[in-house]
Image 1 (tube, rainbow, N blue to C red):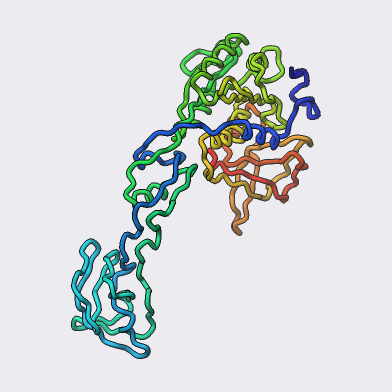
Image 2 (image 1 turned 90 degrees about the vertical axis):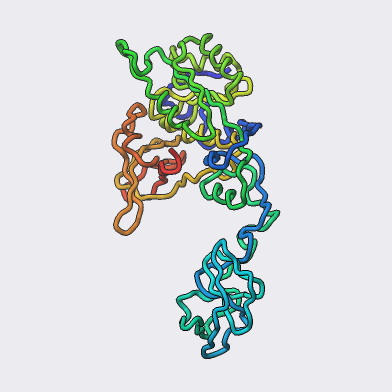
Length: 419
């Protein structure tokens, strides 16, 4: 049984694990879900491909012209000087030329039009002199230029998208180019969310003395508003251990993931922790992170359970640093959207305590030379949700990182691609 006595300011306390260790343990523990649904491709953006997509045709399906110009046989190209070629026919996209182009002739051709057999070069119209139904060309051209070969992009039988691909608009267009109208994608993750705490009230209710509106619930609802997620809204649960555990176990019958906020610290009224402890399936509940130290992770039946802190900023930080990577793994995504971490120069000094990771809210911008600069949004308390609203990036001070002086490099993680 875990010892829950140390306070939230303790660094070298029993059971406290690093951010790196916590994420590693989460990702090694959560499973890839099974099951799929069939979708029209226009509905598949942001979903995970359940099985590979194999091309049934070549793309392009036929050899065609890459430009508006004139097609001819390369044997008719001049070695030096110029030569004159009569225009023997015309081809347009969707209207091929079916006649014969003889020696000394060329074919007027438009972009996308099929190139007849025997012709192996297209000269763009800007490189010829057109006069009296004939063209003059010089010796700068060569075989194969301005021609798109059949199968040049994709060959029949080729695997174009692998299982686990996170589908983007280019992927949708790629499948459409192959005539694919429907695909199988991993089923949606079922994520149940709940708030705890007698002090939190839903919007529309009148908070009593000491009461607050439940901002965490709405932050998570919108953070989870993603194509591959079905959200199950459990609302605000009765803040009592037996009742909480009953609600969580009921949710675990149909949810893949349960996320609760509040009740995982060491206080006497932090009942979520007590309920989880009674279940006997808590992997850890303390992480060397500010904000976000009280983070419970475990299992209830087959559902992964995340007990996030109650403070609004800590909820956002722990969701994006721990929960989102877990959801991506569970959906089977093997090429998650890029949320880059790179270095920027600190505009001012940033204080940090040793022995933990600290994630600040920051604003990044480029100076006139294109260098990235970052500054904090001001007060960084875990209850100051406006610090997230003002920010466009996280500032990440790693476990072993010292305090940062103005002008020194520091890690930043832009919200673009993350939120």
